[in-house]
Length: 442
Image (cartoon, rainbow, N blue to C red; front, side, top):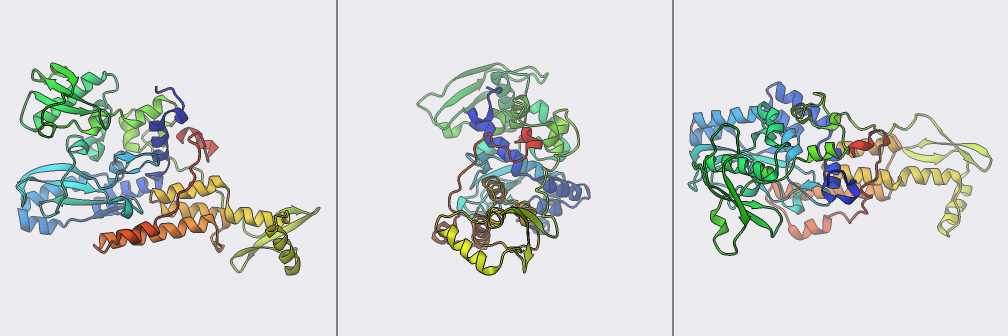
């Protein structure tokens, strides 16, 4: 399966898109620099995390020792690495909405009698603009916010803890069959609950589940515990059984992409690349669209070289008088063929489908700065963006961010959010590559 092209493997196509757009190189670079400087809050800001916790308040409510434990985990948190590994949904690879994921659990109970935990939350679909993630401590004061057992990461700290990222290759079990991998992960899950044997649920698809039973304790020597795997019986209470986390049941996407030759090691997150034995340098930025050349552009038009330049922030054909341009625009409106100069201006403003898709992908994944960089590279930083697909995409993104702000403030209006949602965009084919130089990374 790993050798099939991405167009025949939806999972690889999805993760190609995620790796290309979801965690931009500039985010990784800035978040890493701030984390290494000891500024965990600055690292979270760079990785587009909203910090919904206060260490002083936690210390007053639950004691200084607890606050110190949380502070230590925050200093180890690599928010860009966590975003890299967050659960995604098809077909765009956006963050799975409405999730609450535990990162670390503490020996302190909250108002609801459950252990307090450091957790991240993703907003619902209607407030997902910007693809932001909130970081909080669940202490029983968040109504309905309970960590999802299927997506827990407190047993997989190597997916977010910079000090344990080197464990990634070992925990991805690349050289062991699925049954052995599941058994080893099940042993870790049961030990976290104070047991050495028992049954756990393995979720394969939405309807298909297996029952994995450890019939003997793990000897701790690296071997696999005795295990029995069978279809989940139709009777019985599934809710009482522990669930093997998604991170333990799915193969690592980066290993799949590398094995299929669809990504190069230098396009991986630096901590991931280091753990997998690749280069320690971070992902190189994709080649940006070259900025508009200052001065005038030259276009072959009716046997002559005509000039196109910015005039009052808009592209204008300098070698045609206004009356001629008005006639040509009317002719074009009547399905005629416009002047080459007008075609060149229209092509620059409306952009190619490839550029529009590139901008749209960046906006979908919250990379507004990257989207504007593409637009400025196309038109120049001083140009005015007229009506058209590019402007529509940017306006819709701004409106969706307003909805997200309302949601964060507790003022979200679901009906209004639906009205402001962007219209569906035609997706490029999975094999499309907008940057030939880095085609393998797509």
